[in-house]
Image 1 (cartoon, rainbow, N blue to C red):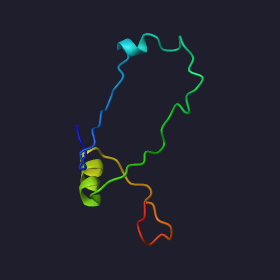
Image 2 (image 1 turned 180 degrees about the vertical axis):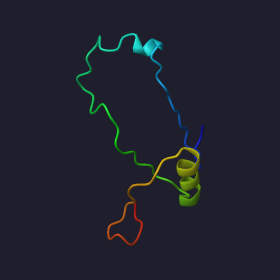
Image 3 (image 1 turned 90 degrees about the vertical axis):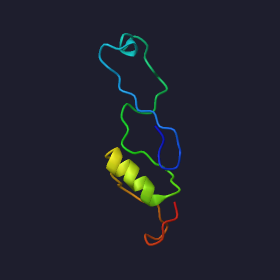
Length: 75
């Protein structure tokens, strides 16, 4: 699917019976950063359209918005 700005999104669900689970634990990954994702940052062009897509359609919630002074959105 594509988001409101036209960025391609791919959502993957790994099933317990899938081919990628067959080798689980057989090859240790020593270079991974984490086993869990607590934050995802998204740059958007249209804030209203992005809030509708990511919030209403995908069910994400905003936890932080970039601002140097807390008053003007800057990133």
